Image 1 (tube, helix red, strand yellow):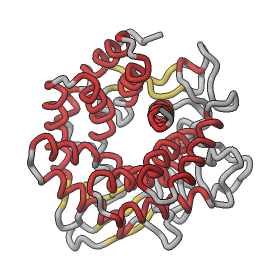
Image 2 (cartoon, rainbow, N blue to C red):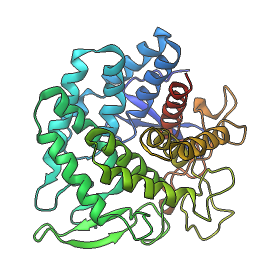
Image 3 (cartoon, rainbow, N blue to C red):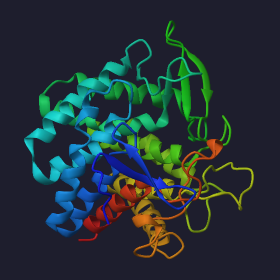
Length: 347
């Protein structure tokens, strides 16, 4: 059941049970068309591709949006998936423009792409930003211009140096001084506390550095991804079903809300990490266990319920009392991606 307005995108479920719709500029807008492309990939049913293409169209203007670092999420999940499946040359031009826009947020003194433009931060960089680098690697492959590649590597190296603690958990936000390039503060925005391990942040880091190894072949990224995976998988607060609480250090465990989105992102990342690692079967088995949990009635919504979303029990931004224990579109997106990766590995 598709929403008739093709310029809005279903993001989650409001507390009153209605669908929360967002405009193209929202950071999550690319996940719905991206999920439609995954459904097309899964089924070869043209109707999914038609829906995806119609929803992609409303996102094109984002390629010029210099006010966000989330261009990779918005454009690469939608047009990037569409390009892989259709080879539509218009999609490639949109992605290239998006990459050119994104690198305008890079500061060579800091060595990072700026995440947000809002207070109280001076130059905030969030671990989520690792997910926007994949589009830059694509842009170098497509255009032959190594600028995109070099910026992606520099950003990843800066994050590797500054975002991780001794146990390989990650901070959510590192705020930099624009004059010196030095670090002002290491904070959280969506996690429980500055020193806690926000679950989705750990998943973004795992996914991002696994992707970095794929794109560069540099062993240091594989090593970091394995250490992040070890932090997640060996954590004493990881539940038996492997769907994490919204923060590994949430104060009210075991009664804290879960985050199915963090589980889905982790599963997808582990399936890829397993292809590169010497201990690949460990990661494959863990991903399989997560997918079995997410595919159980505890998390998988019954058809024609949950406002059409696939998964239940994700948590968006608990400190702001936003999207707690509900369906969220990026949980569905990475769940579908993980299922496709799982299927490919089992063929």
